[in-house]
Image (cartoon, rainbow, N blue to C red; front, side, top):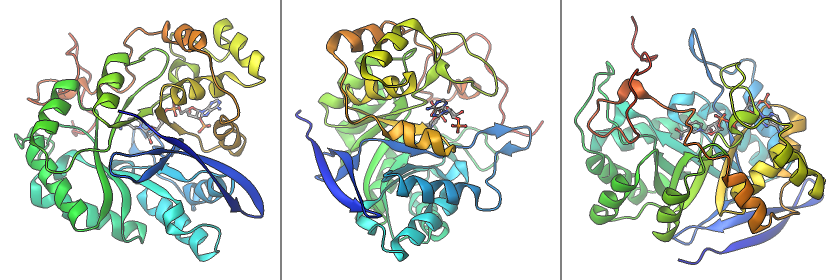
Length: 339
Ligand SMILES: NC(=O)c1ccc[n+]([C@@H]2O[C@H](COP(=O)([O-])OP(=O)(O)OC[C@H]3O[C@@H](n4cnc5c(N)ncnc54)[C@H](OP(=O)(O)O)[C@@H]3O)[C@@H](O)[C@H]2O)c1
């Protein structure tokens, strides 16, 4: 499978910027960096944006050249992303077709008929007619009360196909599926998934799954790209940090920062990074990665950090029939269920 990366120049706010795009297996094109919009989880649940905070982040990101936004029904950020995109369309800064919006179906909406209903609710929140990519967030179906549901992700996929046929989304794909689950889906689907979104950073390189998916014509999107370079849940993690000597050497060579090197490591593996920041300096920094390229040797050096470490590991679901990851001895308590 050959992937085409095309540079598309366009005029924005009077300045010329370049958005690099990757071709999907249905002919559409996806901008090669997505701004992540999950604001995290605290003792009160999902962190909410207040006083249009996230909307303003997105407005700024559009001005800085971002054209791809990653959200999900469970992040509760869909509304503010839609609001910002509509504002920028009204201002004449972008057309709807310039912006690529990825969102995700939550696990409690896996019944075939619930899929289109869920996406219609999302579109209503966003004030948009369609999204560009609708992903099944997990292969795991849950009931409203978060008990396990036995709905097969193949039935859910039929609902995803319905959503695409109705024009509610231009493309469909999956997230957090393992190889066997993708294989089973590819055998049974009528519409092929265009993308797989999984965790990818120096501590989880995912070489086998990435190669498998790319060979089947799926674009891989890598979430949590900074891995241990940044704090997770407010805590320092073991693993390479911002000042890691290997990353610093590469960064110095290209006059870049180590987060930029890590993002470029994904891009050079044909992976679309999904990087979250709400900080205006880091918004600029993270998109400024399209004027250099790592060598094979540098990619290999970063691959060597691999230790199969996941920061998204919902082991509280590990007894579900369709749990996609390896099981652990001591599963985490379920944050979605009230004690
Ligand atoms: N499909 C899934 O199941 C799934 C799971 C997890 C995440 N995701 C998606 O992937 C996105 C990104 O994942 P993530 O938020 O876990 O991890 P991430 O993007 O690797 O890291 C985000 C953290 O890095 C900081 N940061 C960003 N750029 C930086 C830079 N240049 N220098 C220093 N610090 C920087 C951010 O802080 P500031 O905001 O303060 O800059 C934030 O604390 C999410 O927002 C979501 O859209 C999807």
